[in-house]
Every structure is written in structure tokens, then in C-alpha cells.
Length: 149
Image (cartoon, rainbow, N blue to C red; front, top):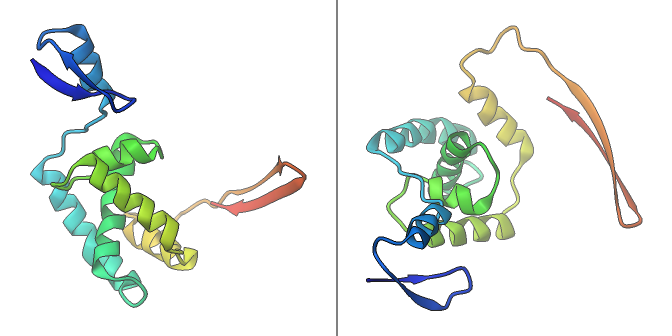
């Protein structure tokens, strides 16, 4: 028998061969990473360091490289899934807390982020730009966004 912590954080004993154990394992959302994934992240770090090194320390640059890799792998912006897909040796909850601290306490310079993205693009000519406008109402506040993509 194994002891699992369920969604509500209360211990429960679950038989080894139960279907609940299989569904709980699927719910944990752990994405398997390989040494090849770490090599991909290590490829991004010098490029990102070239553009972000003057305003960001190496630990934050590596975190962004992990997040970029995870976002490409899972193709969603869920923090839990992103934390699970980060190719690091720490537990998902540690990655999750690291992401939360980064988001809460750091303001990214979006001009620098755009430069890094452009530097990582394999093709730099013949690009098509798209202009999009969107409007939302958040309570009494109108939010208008004009995006150049």
C-alpha cells in the first residue's frame, strides 16, 4: 500500500493496483523530461544572457529558459503544468513556488523580451506582422489592447 496526499491534502491509503491510483498519477501532471531537454535549455541560456544579463541575474535567466521550454512542451500557460514540465531535478511544488515568486516580485522589460524572442527565431526575414485590437470590460473599467504580433 502507498500513502498519497489527495487534492484536499488529507492522507489516504490507496491499494497499489487501484484505478484511483492510476487516475491520481495522471492528475499529478508530471511530464517526463530527458537530458536532451536540459541540453535544449542550456542552448537558450547564453542567448538569453546576452540580451538579459545586464538587467537580470543568471538564476532568473535560467528560470525563464526552463519556462520557455516547458511552455513549448505543454502548449498551455497553466502554472501547475508549466512547473511539472520544467526540466529540472527539483519537485513540481518547488518549481511552482519559484514561478510564483518570480511572477509576484519581478517586472519584465517587454522590449528586452521581444529582442530575446527575435534572437531565438530561426528565420529573421520575410516576417508577417499582424495588428489586433481587443476590448474587454473588467467591472467598470474598459480594457483596450492593441497588439502587434
